[in-house]
Length: 487
Image (cartoon, rainbow, N blue to C red; front, top):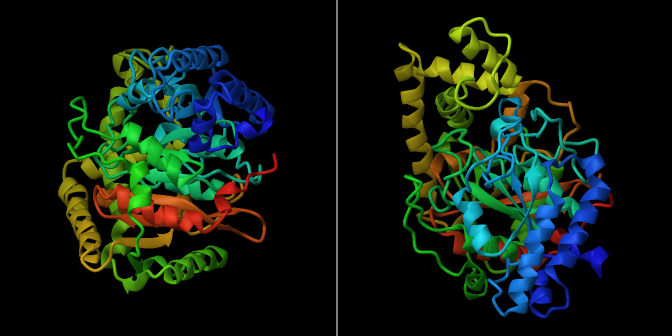
């Protein structure tokens, strides 16, 4: 059975662990062996500590033997994107700037997973400081898509999606600033959930754009996403943007909310640039929901055309501010070639940051500079309000929105050298972050070439229970999530 364990879901493994059919140590060894077998071709991890993972698994087995199991996540190997703090482990953000940094504390999500008994397995590769859509911007090299090693896994949480799809973790955490959980989930054929802004604490997350960033799970199934969200969600006084929302039993709610639902189809999401195979798969998903008794209607999000411009003003402005702390003085990379204090700052940042991060810092600094703040940043914030209002207006008529996750399936490594071409890969996901909404990507088919396609469902604020039930209804009618890459 061990050779099959790494492709099972949290729910399935939880039952096996509870029945003592499998031990956490056996499960962890299976995941470690799988990682060793595929990592040389995949490069999903920045660092791994097998001894620590096995020690955590042994502690889980001891708790279970003593009748002190902590629930369905106790003993489950979970990988974390390398922007989430774990005390005593590397925290690099896939950047030379933090190449030797070890976190002195746990992120809140880390502490909550520890309390649930999860086994932490490795630091997962990503675009540097989570800035990218392909995981090609990492200072430590790109990650490959397990469905086709010549293609990208998406980004910026590409390591999280690739490791999960390849069986090198049972679940993973990512961060989503403009689609960085959902887009790689779609390209790797797994489930990716971006929660409502404020539902999951950002304390201990390396900041990119603080008004957009949100941590969320990548899992094999919608039920697993519900299990993970139940462990992660909740108010945190350490995060000033954390919202004191009521946290339901998301897993139980999957069965309590049978539908049917009123679904909106944003007409702006089905135009130029959408791959025909992606469109066909999403339209088949629409037909499925109609057959289940759901009402589908076209809706309009008229300010969608401004999403990309608005996002890349606000996100880069916040990145410029957040990344100013990496100055070569307090922590992180320090240049040895500097002549004086000013040169130390300049040289450390020049050596420590990659090209994409520099590009975004420069753009963000420009839009915040004297004489340009009102023309760019302030105006972008006003448009952001209009974008959010578009979604809220649509929710007066429908329960959720149905769209493609990515306009294209996984593309070749190195294929999109133009930054704008990469930015356009997030065209269907960035509006969700600007509006602070929850959204989930679920597998909805494959291209003729065997590449996964993702379906995005967008819900009302703090309505994750209904959103997951909607996604679960689709998943139960299909087997896309059960297919695995033949590495």
